Length: 163
Image (cartoon, rainbow, N blue to C red; front, side, top):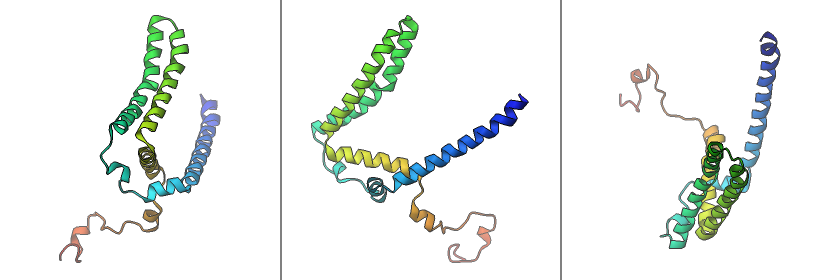
């Protein structure tokens, strides 16, 4: 165990640091792309969601959501079924078919929902992902100026406390 700890753990830490650095570089590069910038700079609700959706749009959104249920969960169920029956062919053949079917259902849902809903869905997903991974440049340049909640904040005599 001594050789393992002294020789392998530093290598694992170095590998972890390299992977994280590479990940951060890729994220920063993607954050500079025009579509990602426009998704992050326009946080208000898109125009597509302000109109009443048609039946085709509702069906399209339903198919998009259904495709997520069909995807990996269905492959997992097929895996459990093939394990309990002892027939791996169920997963070998059925897994790719069901997963491909989920992609087709997703694409049909995108087509029925229309371009405005597809773009709004993509921008919302990108905004949610990149807001967690990359801090907003405006927040970084202008730190929070709110009063700190430390032990002496109630003793300060200023306009914020009304004293």
